[in-house]
Image: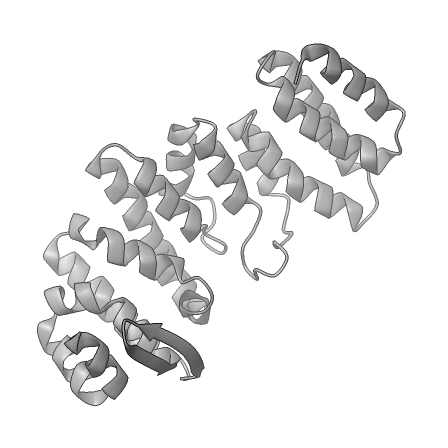
Length: 258
């Protein structure tokens, strides 16, 4: 967007109602950052300040959006803002604003900032496993990948101890995907402990119906489908446990045979 159009957008924003003005300034700051970083930070701070003065529910909604927009301009500002925003993304319980913010950091080149947050998160309650998987893929060395993976393992264990384990195997199952993709980074004994934890948590959850297929095998059991998703590392790290589960669960056995 040419700079004169940004100036026009700023003028129009100033004539708008507070909720529209706050949202507009936040979006303008993201675009302005390509031309003038210092001015973009100034506009961003004005938008955040305006959003903070709004009445609920507009305040929480706009501030939640501000976290991801700030991530494209000032990652530190985004992280500080996120700690005061508890808004959950619509339709995704437990997924807070930092999940999208970290994705935006990564796509705008702030990889080191995203890695630092994911390696040493201020809270594990809503640890963004989807962003962690993205960051591991963007990292250039195994040491960095291992730091993120171990932080995610710590987060998932602490969530489990606080009663959040059921979130791991519903919906997108980001932690399971991360472990299946990157378990080889771990020493064998450490990986074995993690995969056994996963099995225990899967078995502890009530089974439920699902309509899924893998190759020619149809799954009607969420438990067996979740076990199949971690079957590769399970067979490599604990073949005895894998074998006992395959003997017990027929759908898992059929999928394993393929």
